[in-house]
Image 1 (cartoon, rainbow, N blue to C red):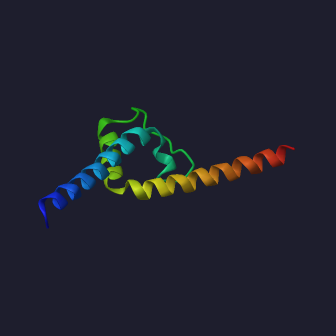
Image 2 (image 1 turned 30 degrees about the vertical axis):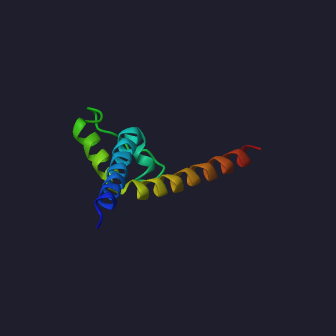
Image 3 (image 1 turned 90 degrees about the vertical axis):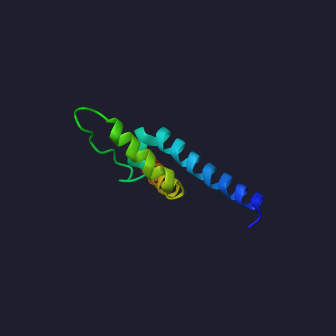
Length: 90
């Protein structure tokens, strides 16, 4: 490979990982929408720990495209439930 091609590849990989890490840090409070479904699970009494935040960021760093898809699916499910609830009240 030509050095400029290697550098371009490194930039794409770095951007992919950087975006995933930022995505993980920003979505930590909403992680139930990306993993367990639209129902929020009960958290421990001590609240979220640094270790759990780091673990979530690490998972999202490498799997953020999959997390985006699961988040979109959860958003679709929640919107459908909201529409059904509004229809039931009318």
